[in-house]
Image (tube, rainbow, N blue to C red):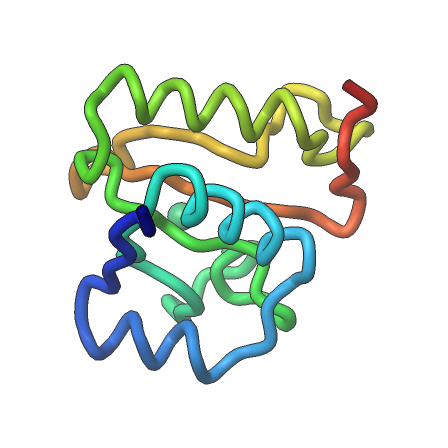
Length: 121
Ligand SMILES: [Zn+2]
């Protein structure tokens, strides 16, 4: 049965449809959508901050609603993405999937980098 796919609001819909998206980010998103479903809460944005990975062309980050999943399932998805994908071999402490509290509540951030590669597993 298809999993549920949601987009928070019209602003996020526009932020997703109006941009090119990195092929690796697309691959990760499609995998999550297929296996677990998802709710997008952020796509491209312009907060006027340099280095914002949500502000790249092609788009290299999206946010998903973490509470769309049971807490253990959200952790399972985060771990599965990071087991399959290396964000940047030069900065192994950085991950493609990251559930964190940015100050506006917990969010599930998914990102890629020009160095992002599929891990050999
Ligand atoms: Zn984010």
